[in-house]
Length: 136
Image (tube, rainbow, N blue to C red):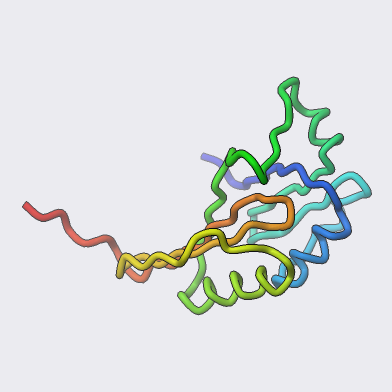
């Protein structure tokens, strides 16, 4: 099976995007970053490549959509606690992001999310245990 993931996202302003994600406590891998893109480290082997729109376009023959208008992907990251979920959303809001939906609590699973400065939706979740057994 797979051992790493690199999610590629089109962005409009690389310095602004870096500042936003650094305000959330993330770091960037300088070995995979330049003036056209930056490698956002999300976990041990989890990365998001923030690519300037023109550079992103060079990887596809299809038009690059506007994430502020169209939802193309929902990125979901697990967190170690509900408090971590809420803390990341709060930091995203303080850094200029938005939270278009309220938090959802299913008892065993809690999630909330934010839109970054380019409109990409990041969902954060914490699972405190397995889902309840089906009834019936």
